[in-house]
Image (cartoon, rainbow, N blue to C red):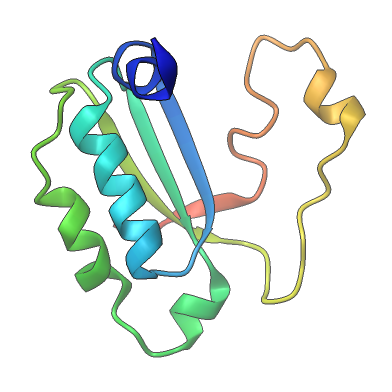
Length: 115
């Protein structure tokens, strides 16, 4: 069925790290919200750059909260990144391939809720 079918029928969780509030990022996440019928959890980790730039991240994210969500059961969460501008997460093959009951990328680099 292609990528659109995959998003509509199979995407259950998306974690978007280093959100900078660009039009393309917001449009992409809004597309996911409006098309992913089985989405259960959308997590956005806002970059330190956006928070320190003086731009109102809540105003940018309002476009997502006002979207017509395809899944009525989706939990929408927004967090501040604990990484400073220029720092990169330590992802690796070993971390990604570990067989754990939880997602290894789930809450490694964010803790403090923004919204």
